[in-house]
Length: 508
Image 1 (cartoon, rainbow, N blue to C red):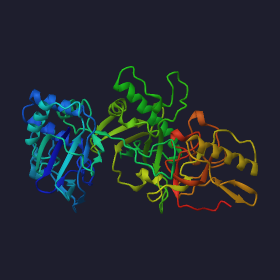
Image 2 (cartoon, rainbow, N blue to C red):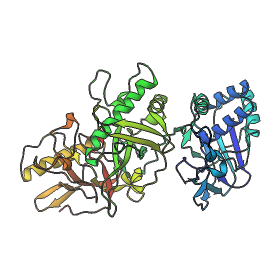
Image 3 (cartoon, rainbow, N blue to C red):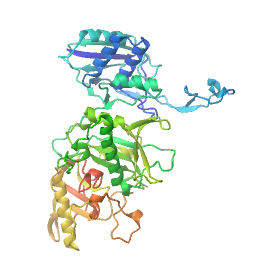
Image 4 (cartoon, one colour):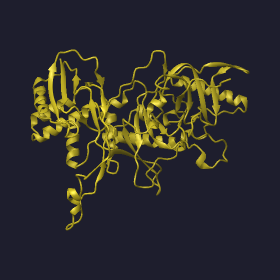
C-alpha cells in the first residue's frame, strides 16, 4: 500500500521559482514546497490539532518519489511591482506606503508549462500507514487551492493505493524532515522567508566501464553572495585552501551550535575523537573559479562541498542541523547565507558570504565540469589548483621530475584510481604524467618557484602544509575515469583539484 499525494494544475501552468533571486521555474515542484502549501492551508483553517498531528506524521516519512512530466519554461520579462513589505519611519508624510506611490522593484515571475498537468508524490510505507491521518491530510489537500504562486490554481488530494509504481518516477531534490512544521511556524512569526527543505543526496550511477575515486560526484554548492561591505568578498584563488579551512571550521562550529556537546564526525572534521587525523576519506571543500573558458581570470565564484563516495553525509539529520545553525537570512540577497570570517579578529578581516544553491547561474559553478568530459568519463585530467606533494623532493633535474611523478602515481592510488597509463618515450617506458608550474586551464594561476616572488603571487597554505612543494600536473589514465579527481596532501582543502580534458596530449 502506497501513500499518494496528487496535484493537478488547473490552468496548465505552474508559477514558482527555484529561489527569490532566480528566474528559473521550479518544476517539478519539490516536496518542501508542497508541504508548505499544506501548512498554509492548515493555518487558514485555524491550526486545528488533528491537522497539525497529520502534518507532523507526514514530515516523519522518508523522502517520496515523484512522477511528473517534462515542462517548458515560459518566456518571461522583468516586471516592476510595488513591494508588499514597504515601511516608513515618518509619522506624518508616508505617501510612499500607498501602493500607487511605492518605488517599483524588479521581479521575475517564473512559469513552467508541463506536458501533463498532474503530478504525484509516492511514499512507499507499507508498515506505517495511518488511515486516520491520511483522511485528515486529504481534507487538508482538498482545501489547498494553489502550490507555488497564488495565481496557479490546483486540485489536490491524498489517498492510499495498491497500484504499481510508475516507471517514470524520479527521486526528489528537496524534501522535508522532522521539525519542518515548527520551523515554518517560527519563520512566519519572525516575518522572514523560510529556508528551502533539505537536499536529497542520490549519487548518479557510474558507467560500468569507468573507474571512480573515493569522492562523490554529488556536491553541495556554496555560491558567493555580494555584500554591502567592501570586506565581504571572496579571497584570491591562491588563498582558497585557507578559505576552505575556514569553511570547514564554520561547519564544525555548526555541530556545536545545533546540539550542545555534539562534535562534528570525522567524516566532516577530518579528525578522530582523540584529535588525530582521520585515515578514512572525509569531506573535501574545493574552490570553484572562472577558469578553462575564453578570457577566464581565475576569480573565485564559490566552493563545492564534496563528501566521500557512499557516505550519504548530506542526508544525515545532524549535518542538516549544523548547516541550519550557521545560516541566516540576508535581506540584500533574499537568501539564507553562511557567513565565514577569514583571519583572527583583525580590523580588516575578510568575510565570505556563501549561499547553498542547487541551480547555479554560472557555468563555472557546475560540478559536472569536474566529473565528466561532455557527459562521459575521461582518460585525461589536469589540475586547476596545484597539487601538494606528500613529501619533500631533494633530487634535482631529471631525478626530481621522476620523484615527483612517483608521488603523483601514489596519489592516484590513494583515492582509489588506477595508476596512470604507461607510455614509451625516448628515455624508456614511464607514466603518462606531465609536471609543470603552469596549469592547462586558462585563468588558473601558475605555481611560482623560489622565495623572491611577491607574496600575492604565491599559493597560501595552512600551517600543516607549509613548506611542501606544489606543482600542476596532467595525467592520462589507461581507462575512462569518472571524477572528481582531487590529488595530494591538500586534497581535503581543494588543492590538487582536477578537471577532465579532451583525451590526448603529448606525453612523449
